[in-house]
Picture 1 (tube, one colour):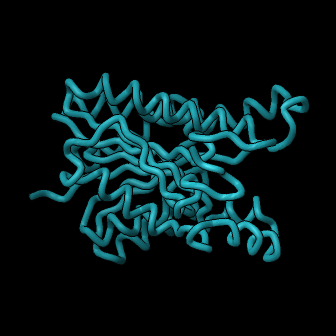
Picture 2: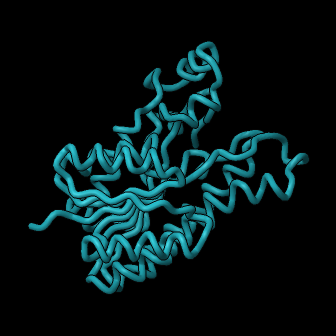
Length: 255
């Protein structure tokens, strides 16, 4: 069976980077994307050092032409796309809803919502031409439940879940499966920025049922599953990876 061709946005750190490395270990052809040329070239070199064929394409997912170029270059280099991970995102602005500004809204929604939509637009175009494949979007537990002072971020990640469901129904006739992952607290740069210091992180960990944040590698394993034939009958779903947080905790009381 030929190696899958995998396209990853937001690939230069965190979940995107961990997923790129995981696919490289499986021998996939990996196209990684982000906005920083030097870091992207370094990652592509690292993937090639693991024996994978890799390509870095600088792209800003907020720009339609950039995303079109990313997808077209993946096809030109590797012949198609089998799996896409739409990971590019930002935590954006946090604060009370009465303080939301136009700039705060745009900074978050343009990346998390528009970026995901544009990515799916061009991935669909190619994947349906080549007989099907799998798309995985990155949402968040905040897209499944709200929390004070993260209304803009939560709304953007809720939109990703809505896109995922609608796109799954549209893609089914073309053999395109569309799912999402919704990580909870995961040890990424975003986690470090939001928690701020060791004392705050310890307080957060104390209310997590597993008493620790997840890792990017654990989310990457979920992406590999959803992108594989083992998940061939799964589409339109959001897989929550929160260490039990939404089952019930002081932060999220559960149902």
